[in-house]
Amino acid sequence: MTTHENITFAELGLSLQMLASLEKKGFEKPSAIQEQVIPLLLNWDKNVIGQAATGTGKTAAFGIPLLETLLHESHPQALIMVPTRELAIQVAEEINSLQADLKNKLSIVSIYGGQSYDIQLRALKKWVDIVVGTPWRIIDHLHRKTLKLQEISYMILDEADEMLNMGFVDDIEEIFKQTNEDKKVLLFSATMPKVILNVAKKYMGDYQLVSVQTTQMTTTQTTQIYFEVRESDKFEALCRIIDIESDFYWIVFCKTKLDCDFVTTKLNERGYQAQGLHGDVQQKQRERILKSFKDRKVKILVATDVAARGIDVNDISHVINYSLPQDTESYVHRVGRTGRAGKTGKAITFVTPQEYRKIVLIQKVTKTDIQKGSIPSTDEIMQARRLKLKADIDSVLAGQKYQQYSEVANYLLENFTPEAVVAALLKLNYQDGLTPDSFKQINEVSIDTTGTSRLFIALGRKGGYTPRSLVDFIQTEAGVSPRDIDDVRVMEDFSFVTVPFADAEVILHVFAKQNKGGRSLVSKAKDKTPQLRAGRDSDGGSRGGYSSRGGRDGRWDRSFWASRAWGSQRSFSGGNRSDDRGFRREDKASSYGRGENAKRGQGRRR
Image (cartoon, rainbow, N blue to C red; front, side):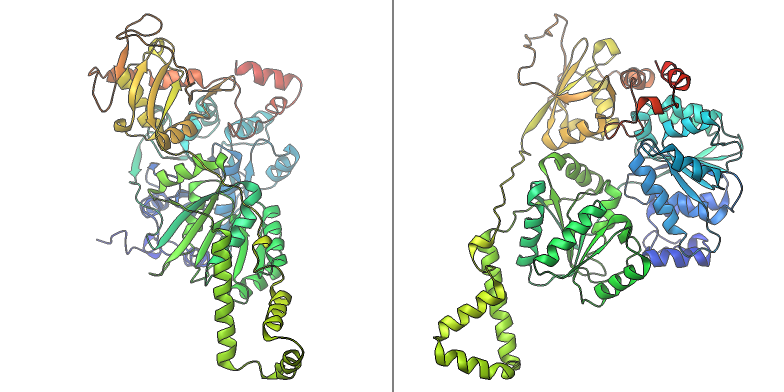
């Protein structure tokens, strides 16, 4: 039997055009989720639930079969629901890039809150084959009659657990009701809470569960480092890293086109040869830039994620995440540019104090240890530049490539001391590059990542919680091991838990989108927590304490999780919602249009 290590895309039954497109994108072998899901969808035998973490290639797992099986029609054939506008854009772009070499291309449109309705209406009036959207904006278009889903072949829920965490379960059910019964339903989720299985039972009928265990998703050939740095010091830090490395062939990743242009311009002003690549670069210019980079005439390529897709360049020595990527999948793709074919590479990520949670999440999902590094000091850079200068001079002297300058050299030595001549030439060539005063000061940033954090959770005994069920709940939703959850105190209306700092950041991130009136379900406890008397809560009730290490309370109420865990969570995560909870909020009036439509939309959600 063919194993995952040596199976190819050709063995999955894909067309020659699709294989050519995948090769052009640099896809070498299918990931575990792709290997299992693609044949199922191509054979059209069952609905599918795919359990796999972000960054495992889920988009291609369902995107490739869509492109292989669908033909251009006069109505939408596939609806892909995602939790945020950023993901809607990313999924649409990724699927579109997969059909680069296909003759019969499908029309793909993303619809999400915050984008002009006019743009979306013009796109939907044309023949659209695949719609990628967020739940609220999809419902808006259904109410406006600008989107019809009665003839779709596929309905796909991507990152379903995240959508349900954000309180979209009612919206998802409403969208399901406006689709035809003979569609194929695909549901992708990193976790499998009870509510997802309830949705599957209600709307998917006979389905097959494909579960992929998360393994280390980044190559062990790549050394991964992060630097804590302020936003204003990033460029100076980048220059120091370039100077300290003796040999480099780099891709520097930026989040936006503006950042890409800024970094490229500033690097060239500093004397480093760099080229920028983003979505606004015309195809001919793009080809010229890539040729210069592949020929190593330019050794630094500054690019956005979208522009870098499809670049097939070997021997990349360094990947620099000048800006943290939007999600873990993008981080994996970036890091995968180096450390290939048995060669070593280095991936360096700049992390601002506000972004520390993201790097913790990336480490958790990718199961990779990303080491904290120190930005090179002024003395280290000075030493590196001096060594490089000596090496360059030795190379010129060894090759005797200076004969044409002999006449000028003799004149200078006749009129000045040798020391003065050399110093003057260095001044002309390096300006102030070999003096400490030429360096901009980089402010030290220190993020305390040690110790534990005490968390406040807005759930208590009134919601039916016990210490065990609360630990179960945190484990299921945030993936934190019960062994790391300590000193659990469940009170009448709220609870406290103590967890290691890194796990606290993960929990805070996961629950940040579950809010009511702007309050997070989980937050860091204040310094002064309620005084607890022995055996009693601050409200006078008996204390239900649990320590995963000490095992104080042996009563683990599993009946609660089966009946009420998600119910309590959903009631808390109601209230105002938007397509990308915690990122940007769509204008309330635009949710259902203006006037009476807006009132009707708001009333429905109260």
